[in-house]
Every structure is written in C-alpha cells, then in structure tokens.
Length: 276
Image (tube, rainbow, N blue to C red; front, side):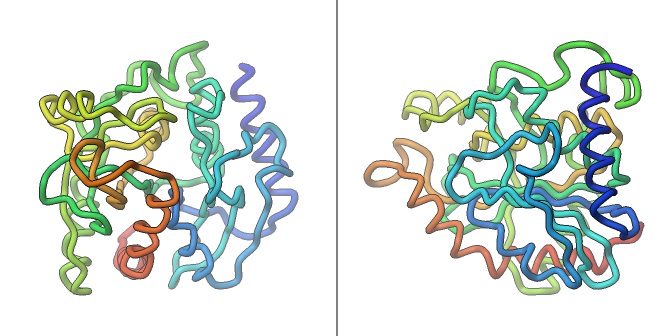
C-alpha cells in the first residue's frame, strides 16, 4: 500500500468508527461564504476535520473545517465546510486529500463550489456560474508523485471534467426554480495575492470567464477517480482592474453571502431530481 492510500484509508476508518450511517453517494465542497447549505441537512452528523487523522486543516477565515453527513430530501450527502488551499502551504496532493477520502467513502457524484472574480463583462457580483471547463494555472497538479492505481489511471482524460449531463440538469432545475444562472470557464491561480490587471487581461485572452484560487485540484483528483462533477462558482467581485477600488477578502465573503439563499435552493432542488 502506497503512503497516500495509507493516509487516506486511515482517515476513512476513523470516519466510519464515528459514523454508523450508510455510505453517501453525493459529496459537496462548500467554498467561501457558502457554508450555510450544510445547516439545511436533516439528521446531521458532524466531525471537526481537525480530529480526522491526516486531514489538512484550513487556516482561512470563513472555512469552518467541518465534515457533515446528513440527508437532503432522500439523498445522503457528505458536505465539507472549509477546504484547504495550495496557498496555505500544503503540497498540492494534500489539497486533493478530502476528495480521495470522499471517493473511498463511496461518493460517486461531487458538487464543487467557490467564490470567484468575474472576468467576462456580464458576470456580476452575486451571479451563480455553472462551470463548463477549467484552466489550471496553479503551476502544479495533484497527481504528481507516486502512482496509486487504486485511485484510477495515472493519465486521466480531462475532456469533460464537469459532467455535461449534470450541467443540463442544473440549468433545467434553475429554470424551474426561477434562479438565474450563467455558464463559463474557470481559471485557477495559486494565490494568495489577487491577480494583477495585466494577469486578468491575459486570462481573458486565454478564454477564462472567472478566476479563483481553488477547486481545480479537487476536480482533477475526482476525474481520476471517475467521480462525476458539477461546479458552481459564485461571482464575488469583478476581477482586478475591472471594478472600482481594491479587492478584499471581506468583500468576497459579503458578496457571496448575497447568493447563499439562491445557491441553497438550487443545490437542494438539484439533489431531489438527481437520478442515481
């Protein structure tokens, strides 16, 4: 057994020792300001991630560091409140550690969320964007290192990292609920500094519609494990050089909070119609 698999399975065993419920099929990673969805789950069981062996602990304000297992409608859902980021100093395979654990716990469908800066002119603070593709500009990849075949092939296909069928379902669900959504390509940089105006102009030329500092390592790991992914990005602010004033983390959290209610209704409705 490789070292990565060993540390993942130690975490999995600890979780099952503390939870007696059936395995979840759906996992959700909640980004900055979107953690309130976990509070809607029925019959929740909660673990602080700091208590789970080998789990990387978030050091970012607004990322609570909790793993919540509960019910949403008839679906058993595993929710992570508080991801870790590459910029916190973790090696990038460690950033993908929670997704490895999700997969080993039985998750087959994953919703990843984040706060982002809008690059495309029609993406405004508070908008929800369904992610259609991604551009990895973080300078690394979570699959670098020793090969662990149990997680999947070493060279996973990335032609559709975000499941087209699930995107269509999300669009239909949003329309039924009267929730406006947009679609676009997400880029990720390492952070933690925000992008410069020149970098934003470069991202636009590369085809990015929004930019963040997370998510992409998680999606790469999920793709390797054969997990179907839906990505929802909450536009928190215009990207650097496109708005007024300086960018702050407080502004990001404040603007994302404006989307919390619509985001929660969309995800709850989508889980109810998901056919798995």
